[in-house]
Length: 260
Image 1 (tube, rainbow, N blue to C red):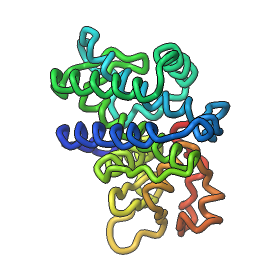
Image 2: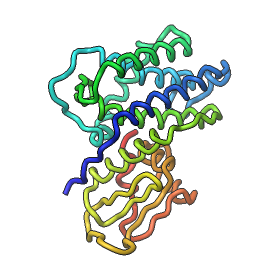
Image 3: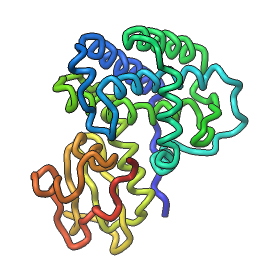
């Protein structure tokens, strides 16, 4: 049986996306040339490339809303992680073309203004035409929390920063990726706990109904997000005691990352 579709508060998600983008914009505006030229830890991207990509996340959202709407959604938020890998190169190329030639503060100001304008003008039910598959604005905004939280964490680690992560953005990101795991490996034999935001059951086998389940995985939100997006691997997280796994089925290594 497919897991239930989780509902998100559209107003809270909009506020979280806007606030998280603002946090990054302020931090990027204070980076010096040496920091911007440093490695991001993501392929051959520099910190400047990563920062420009985060600006593109908001800029492309605004551009999508400025286009005519699609008729019906083709993709839900929980399906989105599985569709991202095939478009990684295309997205990177589009971001470079869109953002080349302007200083980062200008890029962020432009993107923030455009995003605020388009969000104010469009309801959550609006269907965006997207490369990845047409999606409602409400669903697509939930995926923006994933992009923004993941890349905020990337930026913090690459540049030694401490950019805050909005609790609502972190919660939505954690829940979406947990629900995607439950969709990929449907079942009830393993309980995955990511306190305080998510608990899901997954993997075929005897279903747990009461008491302490025999197969449990527990971790914190940032570790879960890094596992789900390929920033760390299962063995390293276990060795570092960032994941606790008990039971013969409590091994998620074959299911991760969900996206990379």
